[in-house]
Length: 152
Image (cartoon, rainbow, N blue to C red; front, side, top):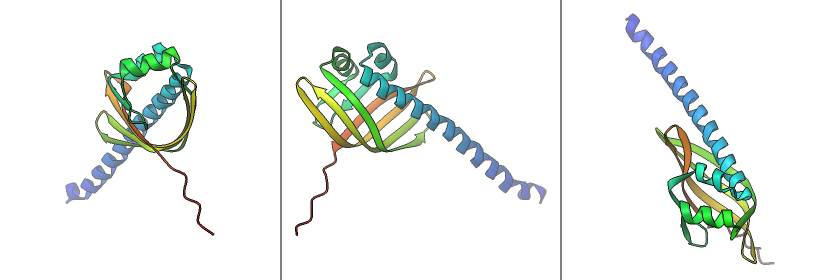
């Protein structure tokens, strides 16, 4: 009987422990994403190389897909320049050990050559723990259109 009464207590403690672990993971990935955004704006090759996974697949809202090498080169050379990244919503979900999905909406200002873009995007990003460090492994985004103005 004593064992049966303590079972719910052990279960509750296990859930609290798991939630605490998830909170630490989410905080670490949030910090890694903040570093990624800052590195992208700076065009800092060393920082980008450190945060991007070797398996990076970055699918832009235009449909263009970059690898770690092509995206890092584009940002470090200035061919593509992010001048602002701000989030309207950013949600992190630890879906499996070592895997975190980041979803949300944001405002991105980016220039490619002489073309400046002011983009409102919805996105899905994947973070993976690699050798004890959170690395940015995938990005997929789409443009969010402004709501249509109702006819009068």
